[in-house]
Amino acid sequence: MSRFARLLFVTALLCAAASMAPKAQEPGGRGGGQGRGRGQVALPDGPGKEIVSTACVTCHGANLIAVAAGYDRQGWRDLVSTMVRLPDEQMNTVAQYLATHFPAKPGRAPKLLPGDVQISFKEWVVPTLGQRSRDPIQLANTMIYWTGQFGSLIGELNPATGRMREFKLAADVRPHSIIADASGQIWYMGNGNGTVGRIDPVTGQTTAVYRMNVPNATDPHSGVFDRKGTLWFTLQQSNMIGRLVPSTGDLKLVTLATQNARPYGIRIDSKGAPWVAYNGSNKIATLDPITMTVREFVTPVPETRIRRLALLSDDTVFYADNGRGSLGRLDPKTGVMKEWVSPSGPASNPYAIEVIDDIVWYNESNQRPDALVRFDPRTETFQSWAIPSGYGIVRNMSVSPDGNLLIHQSSSNRIGLVTIPKTARK
Image (cartoon, rainbow, N blue to C red; front, top):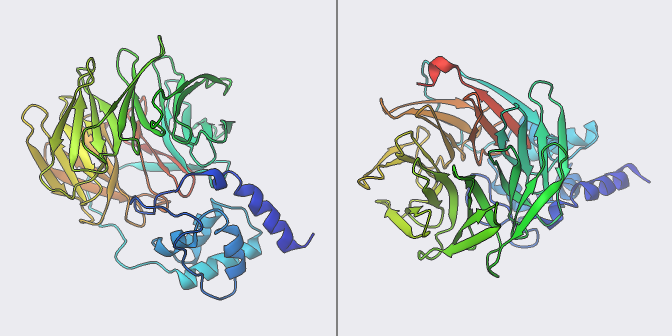
């Protein structure tokens, strides 16, 4: 078998899981598909085109390369190396080809604001390349778990040793997010096959699967447990919100009155009420946890699109306006909203968001590198940092048991831990 034939064979194996994956979102967090056969751009001629056509376009469309931010030779090499394994000579050729024809685009560097807070980043590349690692969480025993959406797997990381394991799920599950219950069991949102499931983190075995009981409920998205152990979750494309009581198996779904609301991120306030971000409309919703009656708050600007939200200790809602490059605040008692333009401006696409000790943390997903932003609600001041491997977008964040921040880079298959000194959290 020739060297190039071996490359074709290895690439086919690497892309087997991706061939079953749903249409991904474009870099920068925008919706829109990247289907392999539709609207494809033509790769320019030049040394390396054949390898890129095989090693890259087999798994995703060439249009994804064209709309990417673009990088220099080393940047492309770093990014491609987390997606496919190529011999060093071919990797150099690919990196040079991509840097020549798809260089860094102007205006994508983040505007980084200085400040007194010092943080540190640590990142790990996950074992299965091209899996679209995302949504890490950490248990009380310090073990970190993530979901590999395109690889249909759940991963485990020991941050002290760097040792990783991966637990394969059924190929059609394609878990979008994971969450842990009070006992430390891991629950996944089966975005690909309309299921919610539970795995034992010790054995990696699936111990429960719940299928949606409504035919058009197809895509569990993001989930959260309330203090009673009830699981609440969104179904973005199905335009629904779900409630599952694991102890009884009782599952109830409600369809939102707002068409194409595309419910996305979800959190629980101190009273046990879910709050939901709308990615398809300029609204934020809250639900009565008993009746599941939906109350909506309309943001002032119709173009607002909110991926995720987070809550302060007094239940004040902060949200990441992905559509307009703003950080927003909603007073749930009065309905009054206030917004601040994100440091990198209206096109920065704020995405994931979290609160630690009433300090807001979020990312600017359209910048290269991806920027992590800190906002102090009391002083209304920002500070920001470039994420070291900021190629691949932070799509969700979570707080570790000791008050640090878990992030990821989904396109470059990295899981990250941001250490925040205790003196800097308030």
